[in-house]
Image (cartoon, rainbow, N blue to C red):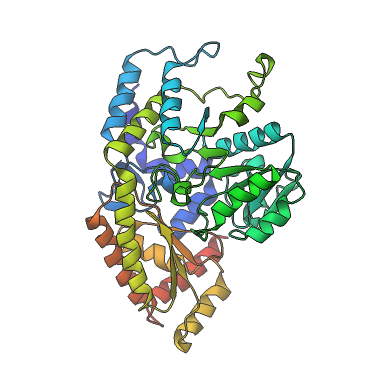
Length: 458
């Protein structure tokens, strides 16, 4: 079977196949906002579409490609594994590579997190973390935050703070309590009954890129200790160098009881994730020979994922990518904050490392305010597309709107970018911001056209 020839022969059918067999609504979204590029290859921080156009990838598969797309070292390691005819997933035996990856993870995680359970995704890591916490504490309540995003499976969805994802899925897990992010008083009220198994939190929230005050996570750690609650850090997006540290909790010297990771762990080649815990937590779950399968899966320790994980950790460390993310991220943050002083609709720049959110808000000037209100009357989520669409159409830079109704645009570029790519993005943002601050003008006309197309396609 010549798979590459088959893919090339039918590449033009990609969108039709997705319409027919996978998700026609997502196809419509891409077509309406002009993101239907039909990519054919990728390398590092760049994508090539079917028309040969190069796109600067500032989305990185929602944070999967921290080491860049198709890193040669990970590809080489996977070729080696395939050529070795591995005795993969015997199940009633142990895989050598999974032990090596678990050891490597234990060496880079904070504190005494040294017990590893491998999964296939971020949502599965969260599901495992919740189960571990409930079994280890013999409690069932879980506290989570407003705006939290921990995945879309039913357990993870139960601790999801976004109404648009929870709709049509109620009732979810009982005993899940929502509190405001960055509010220690609210957290203590939720924990004070002494009956909460875990507080699960993203060190930096992905939806909107909300960064906590410096006392929040250390305070949450103290409160969890006070009330016998386990602290779960969801590092699925923030982990592996994304925020300028290997893990985001490292910014505040906080050691959680349980950490959920995924996304960037395999360099984007193979689905993989992990639940990493203190040995004391793990021992209360797997507490006897009878319970050696207290939590299990089929593919979690597959050799290809484990090998890709080992190679990815090697790249992160040998290329010093967390430090590079910190340096380049500071450069971009400084550049955007300077623009926020000049452009009245750019209200706030949030982030650490290369996880950055640009918060837009209502302008002061009457003319722009009229345009702002008109756009939001048409659709509460429309304004962000005024930024992301021209970034793609005119500047060939892929970004995303950070969440429903937030007026936030988010970037998650691969950690391999440098000053050249940062300047390309900052220069493009300057042009886009200038256009958006002219009302009436082409940016506003494009947005009105988008609204009309959206209504027609609904």
